[in-house]
Image 1: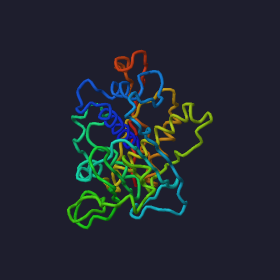
Image 2 (image 1 turned 180 degrees about the vertical axis):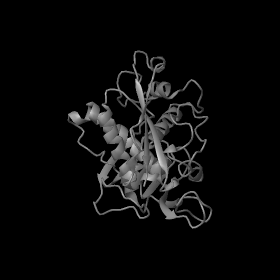
Image 3 (image 1 turned 90 degrees about the vertical axis):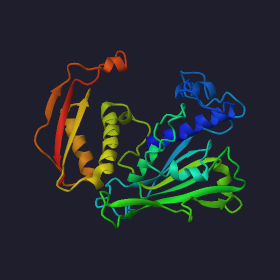
Image 4 (image 1 turned 180 degrees about the horizontal axis):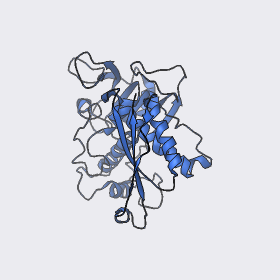
Length: 318
């Protein structure tokens, strides 16, 4: 989902550049430089303050709705125990031309962003990896700079079991016309859509919420345990992504470094994250511990101390 938000901000930066009169991107427009030039020159805050009157669209948004506890993924052997959510990521900035959608938002590992220097991402809509964690995804888009009249474009992405021999048991399919392009609809028939275009909206249905929908206030969000919980939500997503690729008899090895977290807390939360995806997984003895003697953390972030130890945990998945 972080990738989805990155895509939304990338689209906002590119739309802002073009509305400000800069037709071409260049190497000086790093994401930070573009944001300061077009959206807010103050590096000390994160306010949305467009610097050109032509930039009238709003900042991207993300919304969550809990789904019924009865909702399940159709083809997943082990459904997440923490329930599902609907997640919306929306920007009302750039939008995507219909003929480009199959090669950007609907394709993995596109190189669409390699010459868009203000873009945060480098390989297209990496957010399509979010499809591994949801049941289906509705995409609605209308481009800002290409003439579309009263049209917008949409598709629904959904999983189906792979009929042929493959490394993947599931494949993602999407609704398209006979030319392999997203479907066309009219704003006259769906008047509510006019309020969210130009731009792109993605509704992820049946997204594994993994216990991460919690109150935004309280000490659990700032203490080391809260930070640890967010780390292992990320790992749970990683396990869900690789689960279809592994045999039931596989051994999972995870190297992880720690700072300010006790070994017992680390072991417990890691075990919980693995068993969210493989309920019968068991830890194969104590982890191997490596002391980090030549940490380079200070080069990347001056003054940072970094991790002092790394642990190699091994799990048999069944």
